[in-house]
Every structure is written in C-alpha cells, then in structure tokens.
Picture 1 (spheres, rainbow, N blue to C red):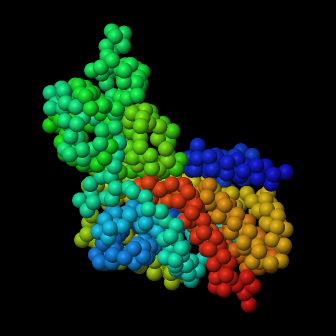
Picture 2 (cartoon, rainbow, N blue to C red; picture 1 turned 135 degrees about the vertical axis):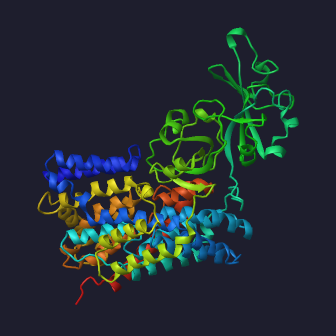
Picture 3 (tube, one colour; picture 1 turned 120 degrees about the horizontal axis):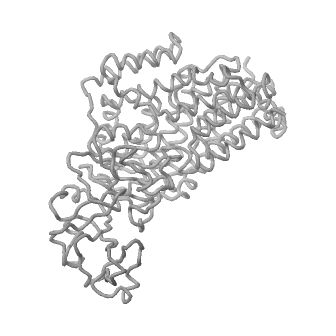
Length: 618
C-alpha cells in the first residue's frame, strides 16, 4: 500500500508543478514533508538531500559562474560575436549557438543567455535581420551546450548522483562530452537546415547599441505648469518630442458634483472612452481634446527620452503602485521578466508591492505580443511579462539573483573587474581540471574553486549568497530523497513502475526501453523543472535497465539528455521564457520549431548513446 500512497503524492506534486500556481520549490518541500509525516522516510533519510555532494556542487557552480560574469570573462566571449564581422543569417545563427553553448557548458544557462542577449540585438540590427531569428537559436543553444559537461546543467549532476545512490560509479566531468557534443552538433544542423525555416519573424524593436529601451507601456502625469496643458494630442507632438505614442488619457472628476471629465459631455464621445469608476474616466483623445493638469497619460514606446526629462515639469512618471509621481534621479534602470512560479504572477503592481519587497519601482510593462490596455496599476502580471524597473544599484543586483525574476537587461551595466579576468579564467580551468582528472571529487574541486574566487577577490564575500538561486537549491535538496522512497528498501515504487515500463517496451529490447524512458522524461520536463524530473525518472531508468540485465549508464545518460530537451513550450525552461518575453513570440512558435527538434534528438540519442555507452558492455 505504501507504493500507492507514494505514487498518489507524486501525482499530486506533478499536478501542482504543471499548474504553476505554487512555486516549484514549495511543492518539493511539501512533498518532502509528506514523505516524513507518512513515515515513508525517517528524519535522517528525509534530509540527506541537503548534504548531497550534487547540491553542494550546484551551489558552488552558481558562485563560480557569477565570478566569470563579474570579472568580464563572459562579456569577452560575447564581444567575439559582435566583432566577428559575420553578416549572413545562417553564419550568425551558428556563431550565436556555438558561443552560448560553450558558455553554458561551464556556467548557468540563464546567465549565459542574459549576457549574450544585448549582443544578439546589436548583431541583428547591424545585419538588418529580425532579432527573433536569433533569439530562439540562442535559447536552444544554451540548453544543448549544457549537455557537454558534468557541471553544464544541474540535471547532469543529478543523473550522476542517481547512479552513485544506486551503487554505481558516478559520471566524470567529460563523460558527457561525446554524446553531448554530438547532440549539440545535430541541434545546430537542425537549426541550419530545418529550424531556420520554422523560426518566425516577429517585430520587437531592436535594442540599439546605446542600450536604450524597447517598447513599454508607462503612465505619466501632466504636472501643473506643464507646457502641455491646453494643447491637443496633435499639438503636443509626443511622438516627435519623446518618441512615444499616446494610447489613452485618464482624467479624474467628481461625478457627484456633475463634473464633466472631458471638455465635451462624455455621452457624445462614448466610442472614445469609458468610466473606470473611483472617479476616473478614460478616453482615447480625438483631435479637439486638450490636456489638463493632473491628467494621467498612458504612453507606449521607448521611455529613454522621458527618463532624461524627469524633473523639468513636462511630464512626470507615475509610481505604478501608488499612482503618485516618483523621483528617478540617482537611480539605475533595468529590465526584468517574471519567472514561472513568481509570487507576483496574478497580482496587480499595487498588490505586488515591488518597492517594499525588492526596493525598486516599476516604470513600465511590456506584455508579450499584446498591447497593454489596462491602467498600469490595475494590470495583472503574467509569466513572461517584462518590467521596466528603477532602483539603486544594490537593489538591482539583488533583483538579478531573485528566483522570482529572469534578468533581461541591466541598462547601467554592473561593475566589471576586468583586471582579474585571466585569474578567474585560470581558477575555473584548474577547478575543471581537478575534477576531470579525478584528482578531487567534483564537489570538493568546486568548493575549492569557489573559495579561490573569493580569496583572490574575483568574487566579493558580500556577493556570494546573492549569486545562488536558492529556490533551485531547496527544490533539488527536497526532491533527492524521493529516490530513497522509491527503492526496494522502502516502497519499491521505482521497481514497480519499471516493471510497467518493461511490459510496455516488451521487456527484452533495451532500445524500446530507452525510448519509453526518454518519452517519459521529455513529457515531464515540459511541465516541471528538469532537475526535479531527473530526480524522479533516473531511479526508474536504473531499475528498468537492471530489469533487462542491461547497463544503467546508457539509460541514465538518455534521461539527462531528454531532461534538457525543453524546446516544445516557452515554459519548459527559464531561458525559453526569457526570449519569449522579449521576442514577441507566440506559444505556437516553440511548438513549431522545438517539436521537430525534440523528435530528432530522441532518435539521435537512441542511435548515439548505446554506441558510447553499450547496453551490454564486455
């Protein structure tokens, strides 16, 4: 009966993962608590994940990755793409995918994509290309590049740890390289021959080289004494003066005193406006309508010029939470996208309380592929929304590592310590070398590398904890004991599921068994974290292999590959959501371009993995 209880708990967790109504780390912690309360695991077993070498390694890799960013190593790689001189679309696509793949092999995927994204916008502008032709290849390249090394992505580390827990020797640093590089090469060929025909041309405004902003909807007030008072929209020439389009005007009035909110009775202009309630009337200005003091204007476009004119009495940006004017002097500006599971999803900007929680003010919002028609304060946030925020450099630095957000672009670039660039690169190379040669366990080598980065000044002590995505760490640590709960010494659920898979696959053909395991992994990784997916499926894959009398290594390698094939939906991985939010992509764009790639990589893996990792080694 215990195995059915465990399966019920897993199904409930999967439903919560798929719904995205509860953060993934909280779902994992809730599952761990349920395992403890039901007695499936005891206390010592339940908290083994928090002492796992794999978890320690992931923590250290976040810091090592952050040091490479801070010292400018990652920026130097990005500049190679800019200075290449390549202008052909296919050549640029290959360069972008190779560069992000190399970076992702040794650092966090999201960091690699975020660093390269401004360069990709600049490259597209110089070459006269739609940037959307390069953003999906950028995202897919980061996922494929992470398959080349043990530290390239958390699923690789967790797959290796699953082998260790089952009593087998773990994967080494470059054991992933033969299969990972082959899959990476196939992914690039696919994008060149097929994918480039399926990646759509959308029209997000390109990011100019001076790091100005893309199109946002923002709200401003007309202060008393403004030169706009009494002018019509045509006379104001907001597009010429500020590069902004006027969407709507919001005017306050006192209905009890029979005040008219506009210069003419509103009943005769019903097609232009609507009563918002709470004493506000909203309308699209017609040619004769004039601006009045304290009008709130809803504008769309690049707000760079508007930011430079704050304080001159022309227009003042409104606080998105309180509706009052704000002081943006002495602050820095950044663009962030909401991550799946962010606590702000579904809330209005007022309810989200950005200034209280994060110390930043939201200046504008950019919604994927759609115009924002609600007032800024009333808009309910959705995954992938890109927010224009303003705050101190310290607040933006903390926001950059908050798991609720994916950083798109920090307009005032964080300080780079280029003088320690070669030192950071050397420390990273030594760390990888110690792990690759077997001189040290990967967790020990990563810990040594992290401390060396701190001691050498490549990573200040004050910043080490902000580099770590603690939501990922807690989710992994909470999910890892699940493999214990599924083994034969506890519920036996893993073997029971494996026997079912053996029945489906015929029970004798390891190729059929691997296909079933990969399809299960690909399906789950579209609705849950790929790290959590590996923790769940890897023990099942090992049990399936042993049930056939085959080696578990090809099965676990296949699980690691399948866990990174999150190409079908924008919510399959954070990097997909990152480019989805800034590229004006549609959900179907990922299905069209990522679906065939997923099928091709499954077929390729079935053919390649057993040649590198035989089912029945001699």
